[in-house]
Image 1 (spheres, rainbow, N blue to C red):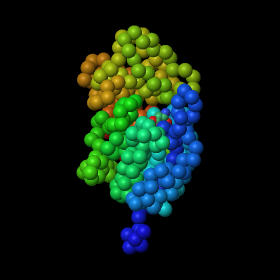
Image 2: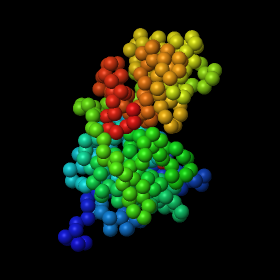
Image 3: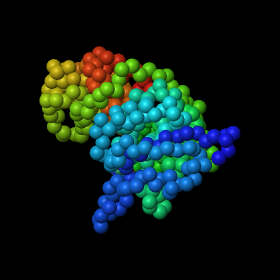
Image 4: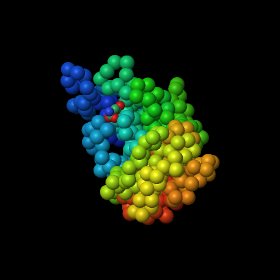
Length: 333
Ligand code: ASP
């Protein structure tokens, strides 16, 4: 190593997912594999990019993560960050957009890159995407750009705007309502908005992340069930710009009960592109009149993260309504 040009110190946090899995049984279902420390031996060129350390806070399929895992990850990044120029998190793809959203809010003020990545095929498999995604992620982590984002399939996406869009494609993620932060071809091309957003996350969040949020995704004829005891908030993935069948008695009963219990009802669109605009149609105007909160352009993951953090901190309805009107960490609202 050239002492005049020390390589940037990058922390690699491995949390599980397909990336490190190995065929564990004759049916080839994938389970987390052993000896993940060997990543550094398997991708030796990483050493040219950075001085890497590896930690494994937990090793799970991301579909099995609980809010506590994600909060632990946020605390780990916060504690370790002063010793590193950037952090790379290897994570399963299934819930990566949710983790990226929670971290995007809780670490918005970190001031250095936090790059989540993973893969559709394990590192141990041929013709996979794991090696490239990891190298790209480490490269991005050395850029100094203060963003929490997902690096996957040649792009870097802002975490609070991202979604998993494909089960099989190597370009599995996107941020439908925000251009990518960077495109990774021959060069790492950073776009002008990378790192540029107002940081307006209220202080004091992150001691708890409420998961007891009921999500309704209607279709014609769907019965609307009353919120069970223990539910603290509702997320409705409405049609188009925020429409629901407002003549339905069971929906009216649900909205009444939510009001009685002072449960926040956040409304997003079922559509991937665009969002809720209350008042575009009569139905959404009526929905707004019930006290429902427009989630605008939030992804479902950013909305669940924001609502979970607000409820986890005991916020009231008025404060939650205000939270959805403001972009905390560069999320489209
Ligand atoms: N089930 C895996 C996970 O999310 C899928 C993946 O990593 O691609 O952990």
